[in-house]
Amino acid sequence: QVQLEQSGAEVKKPGSSVKISCKASGGTPNSPTISWVRQAPGQGLEWMGRIIPMFGTTNYAQKFQGRVTITADTSTSTAYMELRSLTSDDTAVFYCARDVHWALDVWGQGTLLIVSS
Amino acid sequence: EIVMTQSPATLSVSPGERATLSCRASQSVRSNVAWYQQKPGQAPRLLIDGASTRATGIPARFSGSGSGTEFTLTISSLQSEDFAVYYCQQYNDWPQLTFGGGTKVEIK
Image (cartoon, rainbow over all chains, first blue to last red; front, side):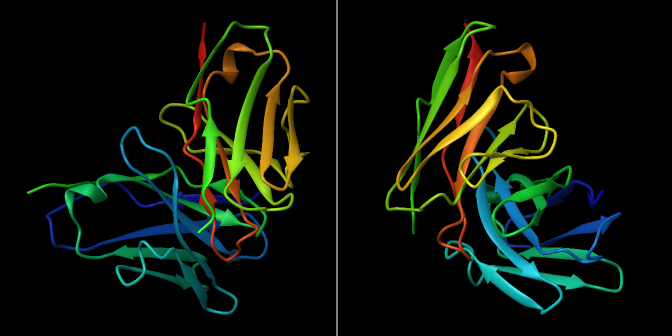
C-alpha cells in the first residue's frame, strides 16, 4: 500500500520561498501522480496543482500559476512543491496526495507553513 | 472554473440519526464527484468517488448519489467517529480540480 511522507514544518519570512517534499513508498508505480492541496487555518481545501512524474507533465490551478512549481525526482520517488513570494496568507497546511485522476486516494500527513516576519 | 457549493455549512445531528449533505456544481460535472472526510488535525480521507462508489474500507453507512449538478452524501446512522468535516470535489474539469467549501457534521 502506497504511503506518502512529507517534510517537516517550515517558518518563512514574507517574500521568501519554500520547497516541500513528498516521498512515496510501498506502491506502484514508484512515482505516482501527485497533487498538492493547501488548507489555510480553519478553511477548506484548495487544489494547487499536480505532476505526472512518468511524463514530467504539470498542471496548475490558475490562482497559483506563476508562483508555484511542482517537480519530481523519479529516482527517489519524491515530489516537490515550491511556492514563491510568500505572504501571511500562505500560512497553511500543505498536503500532497496520490492523484488517480478521479480522486485523491492517499494523502500525506501534511506540512505546516508559517509565514511571519 | 467549476464552483462546488456545499450545504449546509454546519449540520447538527444526534448519534444514530441520518445525515444528508448536499453539494451543487455550477455546471454539469456528470458523475465525476468525490467525497472526503476530514477530522481535526488529520489529512482528508477519500470516502466516495464516481459520485456513488465507496472507496476501499469505507463502511456501508456512507452512500453517495447524484449526477449533473446535484449530489448528496448520506450517512445512514451516525457513529461517534463520523463527526467531522466533509468535502465534495469535482474532477470533470480535469486537469483542474475544485473542492466545495465543506460541511461540518457536529453532535446535536
